[in-house]
Image (tube, rainbow, N blue to C red; front, side):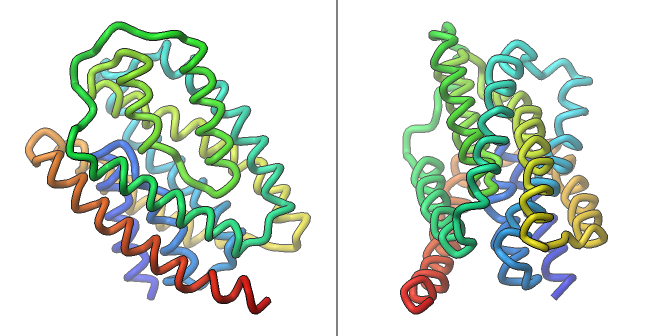
Length: 256
C-alpha cells in the first residue's frame, strides 16, 4: 500500500505543477483510504504535504521571475488568517463530516475544471483589491477546515480579480497554496495534540519528497500538454473520488 500511496504522491505533484491545483484534493483520500489514517490526521498531514510540494514548485517559478508578489501579499496574507480560523473551527467538526464536506469541494472543483470555457489568458485589468482579499480569506477558511489547498479557486481568482495571465497565476498560486497550507498545518498540530492523535512524519516526508519531484516535472510538461484535456480528465477523476467518499462516509454518518 505504501507504494500505491507514493504513486499517488507523484500524481499530486504532477497536478500542482501542471494545473496549479489539485494537490490536497488527492492527498486526503490517499491518506485515508490507501494508508488508513484517521480523517483528522489525514487532513492535517495533507496540508504539510501539499505545502511542501507547492513550495518545491514555487521556488523555481520565483527564480524565473514568474511570480506576482503583490498578489501573493493581497491574497496570501488574508488566506493565512482564514486558514488558521478554519483549522481552529475544525476541532468541533467530526472527521466523517469533514470528509463529506471535502467530497462536496471535490465535485465543485471538478465542475470548475470541466467548464468548457476556460479562464481567459489575457491579463485583464485588475479589479477591486477588496474582492481579492475577501476571496483569499474564503479560500483560506476552506483550507483550514477541510484541508484543501484551494488552487482550483485561487487560479481563476488571480486571473479574473487580479488581472494576471494564466501562466503567471499558476506560478503565483503555488506560493499562496504553500502559505495557506503551512499556516493551517501549524494550527492543526495543536488540534491533533488536543485529540491525542499523532502524525506519521516518515510517511509525510516520503510523500512530500516524491510529490515535489512530480511538481517540478509537471511544470516542465505544462507548456507541452493540452491544458483543456488535462483539466477535463482530472475533473472526471475528482467526480469519481468525490462520489466514492460520499458512498463511504454518508451511510456511516447516519449509523453512528
